[in-house]
Length: 232
Ligand code: SAM
Image (cartoon, rainbow, N blue to C red; front, top):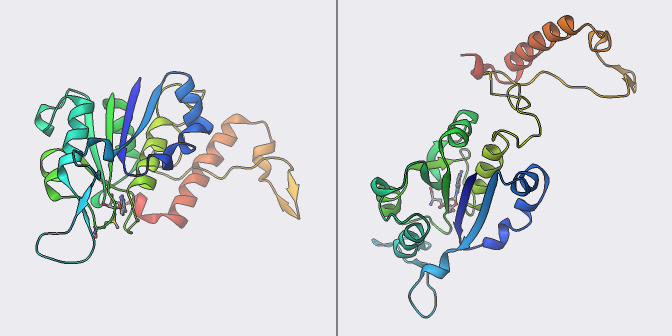
């Protein structure tokens, strides 16, 4: 069982997202548990303030460290990354983090049993969180989102579908894009001809060795054409 705890000021963002498709099935099968927690529950003041102005001046607000540290402490028993239980990862979603890849998703799915996802908002998160609490700082790409919630959902989705049994067949994820350093081969379904566009003959031949060879060559050609950087 892999446990995700998401710390956010918008827990409602996740309610429907975790309740459909493969993620819902994996939760029902007991492979994964996903809980979104409101950061405000770990504030100690009357108004549940989670943000404050940046030292040194400048625009916007910064998420304060105290409720985030308190939340991670409540969920893991540890207030510093060195003291985290084994197989626990504290991930900060951040435009400045390492870019999320299939290899990182694989690493988390194989090596973690408890993942805390910290969603930033406003101008970001007090740097002491990244310094002392976070094991992984992850970006989902070189662009800036309004908050870490969509990025947290991307991480949950990509990791869960790699858990054994999540896709219904243990081998389904093995041949997908990126898992072997290539894009997936082209896929077709019925009808065999649509508006004059025909499905490659070999896929209708029933010759499995020939189909396999065609798929390998087509995956290589597609990768060369669309993502030549993957071949380097
Ligand atoms: N001032 C920050 C900067 O320039 O790096 C951007 C803050 S952004 C408006 C607010 C929050 O959205 C961040 O704290 C982070 O949690 C999340 N976020 C923004 N872009 C992201 C990305 N590419 N990947 C993951 N999280 C992102």
